[in-house]
Image: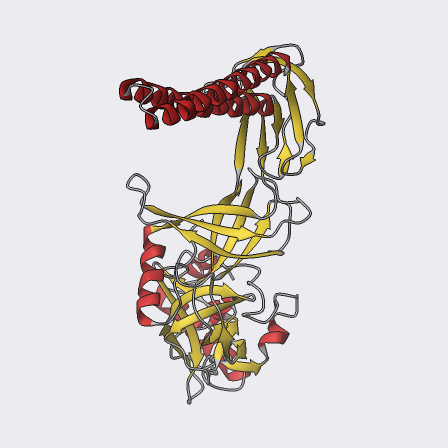
Length: 420
């Protein structure tokens, strides 16, 4: 019956309340007595791995630009009209190869004139020496004044000096003729010619006409800059004996071009500058690479990887096992009582797809690698043991550390790691 009808029939509010309590008691009795207490949820299921421990070498990564070891601007050493060109634009040229010819006829005429003057000077020497010998005999016979004899001797000396000057003029004229044939001073790749045949070119100075350029190809430099922080790291490692300085040993370097996977080009450190750039607070370095096929071209950008440490025993874990709490990095391990424990760690770079742990983790720790978001510190878990290889079965492993640089080494959280 409805409440209004109950009131109409004389039931009061107290009576209705008693009826409700009775109905509830009857329902509880029908269900078999008292209500069951709520049950706790089961522990979360997680995947657990043990950290990997092995010897590795850390690698730092920088952006560099390829540069020729030798670069020459070809300028004429004499002035004249360009007579012929003896190369194809963009060719590989050898040292000493003929490139340009400037009209040599004016210089050949000067050479003939200089040689004729030399012949005349030689004739003058013969005459002066003959007069000197005659004068010496006459002086011995007291038939020639001593003063006249000294004059003849000085004339002979002057004639000899004139011959030397004439010989120098001949050599200069020969050089002028030789300079009309412009040859490659180095081996390398030549650019196109900047001046066509028949044009007048100026020579003999740094402002002379630029004819073309040549850059060497094999070997080739890669120039890059290291941050002040990384430079200090290398200096401290060298001082402590953990890594030899590139100034003392040509440490190995690997190069990757823009369209390449991995770092297929192997070279070595060649040069480290003697001071940091005051404007950029960076240290300039050079690596050198063999380039027999000429594939590496000056001006190309590339990524270089430089040895950042000596070989050492490291603890490695997968990145997915690492949690972040603002600036703090942590992992969850399983304690002896089967509960999750939070541990703060200091991280290093990636090596072969695994993250280096510098401190905070032991090799025999059991590490939660999957299900991290479902775990609370101090709460029990339901672990399933797996290996790192099974966890990374999607192909995240790489080559053995130390044999080649790792595929990735980006880490903005670890001190001293690569700066791009």
